[in-house]
Image (cartoon, rainbow, N blue to C red; front, side, top):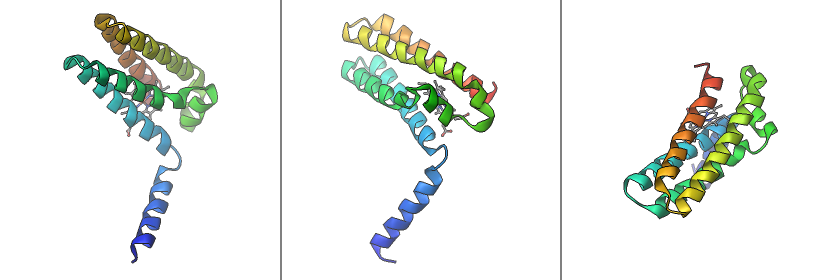
Length: 132
Ligand code: HEC
């Protein structure tokens, strides 16, 4: 098979696999990576690293910018929990903004408390969608 055809085939396969909730899962992995980057930034005293992680987190979290996008990303049996999930995503957005403000003012204690809040926000939404 020629390389071009092979690449086309790969693209077709991956777009089929990524249809449905693919976008959500990719963004969730980005969120996980961003949280790692931020915590490494705190541990290794790397302000730039923290800020980069925060930007990546904001970018990934933008899939939850509207009520309809939260609803779209939930499975059919979870859609009735869209409002509570959306509120949760909004809270997380506020905590991300606060963390960013604290980091830019070198208030690392306060920033790290926001980090903990964000972990709680991740868990709160996962509790809803996973029935924990
Ligand atoms: C508004 C709801 C919501 C918020 C907030 C949320 N998630 Fe998720 N997350 C989901 C849904 C829905 C799934 C897919 C269903 C599942 O895994 O049970 C998911 C799944 C995941 C997965 C598993 C992906 C996979 O491939 O199996 C990871 C990792 C993840 N989220 C990370 C995070 C992190 C990190 C945060 C916080 C920074 C976060 N999520 C915040 C809704 C949310």
